[in-house]
Amino acid sequence: MNELKKKILETKKMSEKEKQVLILYYCDDLTLKEIANVLDVSESRISQLHTKAIQQLRYIL
Picture 1: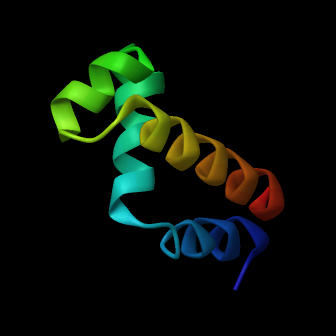
Picture 2: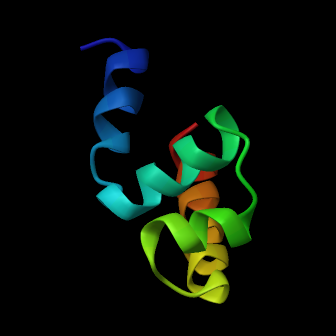
């Protein structure tokens, strides 16, 4: 299996919420506050999810 496939498979270990946060933030250009409203959780929780997801991506890549 080539290296890119391995990295892509590693992203599947991220939670759905973490993936959603990244997509809403980087693709849909929503702020953390807007994402919190969309997902009906606190802004601080969104910040935690965002930080964890970024850390995981850094590890994977």
